[in-house]
Structures are given as structure tokens and as C-alpha cells.
Length: 95
Image 1 (cartoon, rainbow, N blue to C red):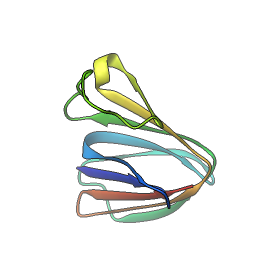
Image 2 (tube, rainbow, N blue to C red; image 1 turned 90 degrees about the horizontal axis):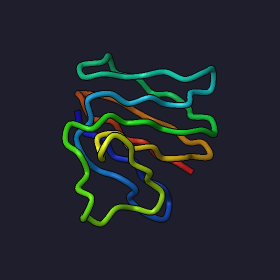
Image 3 (cartoon, helix red, strand yellow; image 1 turned 135 degrees about the vertical axis):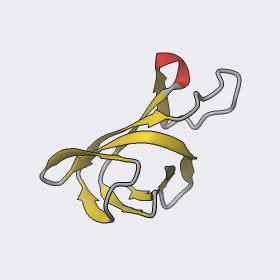
Image 4 (cartoon, one colour; image 1 turned 30 degrees about the horizontal axis):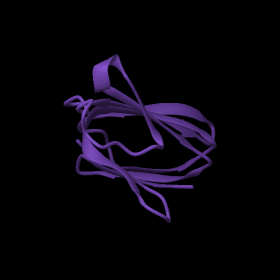
């Protein structure tokens, strides 16, 4: 599924993910491929995404992103925001 994480200043990440965890207002939750359409507010916390392909170590990455598992997992700290998933596309508008 396509994942985009955007702030008012910049595009943080755009790529393919297999699973994404969010810090929801009522607790954390995860979405997988073919999840039902959803819109949710986000609390301050960390978005964790399992990527379909690893981020290359030599590639230019956003300073807001930390990687794990040889670039297959990314984490992005947010102060809040909103996410929408529809038709296997996730858009996160983050603070």
C-alpha cells in the first residue's frame, strides 16, 4: 500500500509499506493492506511503518526518519495530525 507522510513544511516520506502503526487519539492502532477505509486523528507519538523494500543506506533520507532492521522499518515522530486510508493509499498530515 502507498504511504505518504506530509507536514506543512515538507514531504517526510513516500513509498510502499506492508503495515503501519499509528498513535491514535484513543491508543495505537495498525493498518494492513486492504484495510477498510478509515480516517483518524493522531496523538503525539511515533508512526512505525514496515516497508515493502528497504531504504538504501546510501540514499538520501529525511532527518525526521529513523530506520531499523537494515532500512525495512522506519519511525517518524509526530506531534499529532490526521491520517486517512482509502483504496490502499495512506495519507498522513502530521504536525
